[in-house]
Image 1 (tube, helix red, strand yellow):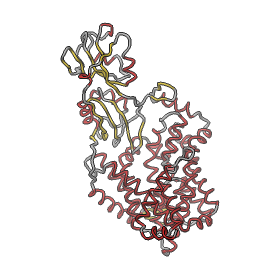
Image 2 (image 1 turned 180 degrees about the horizontal axis):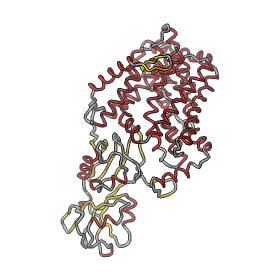
Image 3 (image 1 turned 60 degrees about the horizontal axis):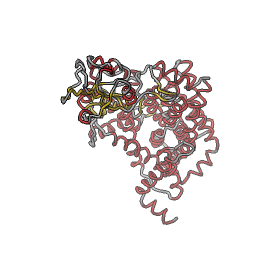
Image 4 (image 1 turned 45 degrees about the horizontal axis):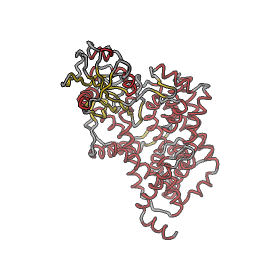
Length: 563
C-alpha cells in the first residue's frame, strides 16, 4: 500500500485520469435500473482513492476544467434559452423560478436549523438538487471568503462530502416523487392524462403504448394497372389520395425512359412508379389491384440524410404538420428533432424553434432544397473557433468577477463561474442566429461538458477523501434527512403551484418539474409510467433556466451562510 500511495501522490495528473476512469465505470453500474452517472461516479471514486493517498490538488486545474464545462453548458442551451423564454409562455419560466427559489429557501432553512457551515450547506444543495455544477460555483465563492486558507480548504472538502451523502436520495427521490407520488397527490391517472393530451395535440397511436412518431422510410416500385384505379390520374391526384401517410412518387419509368416526378404528369398503363413513404403504408399499398415490381435501376436513386440548424423565419414556431404541407417538403421526411441536446417526439403538433436541429431524409436533390428552406446545413467539422471561445471565457469571467447582485444588505459577486456560463449562453444564442459565428463541433462541446465536470468533481473528491469519514461523523444523520427534505420540498411546492396557480396540464407539469430540477432520469421515469413521450414538451422550456439558476445557487448559499 505504501508504494501505491507514493505513486498516487507523486503523479497527481495520472491519479486524476485513474479517478475519472474508475468514476465512469462506477457511474455505469446499474442497481435495480438506477445508475449514478459518470459525474457522481467520479466523485465517489475520488473520495475512495483519497482515502488511500492525500493527493496534491491544483486549484488552477480545477478552475480551468470547470470554466470549460460551464462554457460548454451555456453554449449548448444558448440557442433554446431565449426561445424558451419567448415562445413557451410565461408559465414554465415562473414554475422554474418558483421551484428553484423553493430549493434555495429549503436548503437555507435546513442549514440554519442544523447549524451547517457554508461547505456542508452548499454540498447539501448540490447533492439534494442533483446539480453538480453548483459545487463549482460554491467552491469559487468559498475561495473569496475572508477566511484563513486552512478553513477554506476544509469548507471546500465539506462540499464534496455533503454532495456525496445527499446525492443518492436526490436522484432516486426526484424519480420516485415525479413518477409515482406526484400523480397520486394530483389524483390523476397518468396514462389516461397522457393519452388525452396526445389526442388534444393530434397525436395518433397505431397500437397501445406505441406512438406513430418516427417510422422507417422505404422506397418501393409499383406497376400502374387498370385494376389500380390510377390510370389517367396525375401524380398530384394520386398523392392526394393518401395525404396522412405522406406517400410520394419519386420517379416514373415509362418504357425505357425514367421520368422526373412532375406533379402534373398523367400516369399511363404499365408505368412503374417509385413510391417513398413509411414502410407499413407501402406494405398496405401493395394490396389487391396493385402489382409491386423489382426495378433496381429505378429504385437506385441517391438518398441523403442531413442535419439542419433551424434559422429560417418561414419555419420557426411552425408545427411539423404545418411544415409538412409546405411545397418544398414534398418527398422529405423528418428523422430526428433535437433541442438543447434533448430529442423531441416527431408529433404533427410539435413546433420547431430557432436553434433546433432537425435530421431530414429523402432524395438528395430534394433534401438539399429543403435544407435551404429550413436553415443551415450542419456539416461535420473538426475545427473549433478558439478565438471566440477564449475571448468569451475571459470577458465573461472578468465581467462576472466585477458584477455583484444585492441580496438584502449584502453584495454577492457573480464570480467568474457564473460569468463564464452567461458568456456561453450568449455565444450559443449568437451561433443560432449566425451559424458561421463561434463554431464548436458537437464532439468538442461534449468533451468540454463531460470531461470538464467529471474531472472537476474527481479533484474535489480527492481533496475530500482524507477527511470524508471524519466529516460525515461531524455532520451526522441530520445531513441525510435534511438533504431528503431539500430534494422533496421544491418538487412539492412546484407541483401544487404549477397545477393550481398556473393551471398547467398535469403531464406537462411533471415534465416541467423534471426540467426545472435538470433531472433527465426523472423525465424518463415519467415517460415510462405514462407510456408516452409527451412529457418532454414540458421538459425543454424549463431545463435551460433550471440549469442556470441552480448553478448560481452555489454562489448564493455560500454568500448567505458564510457571511
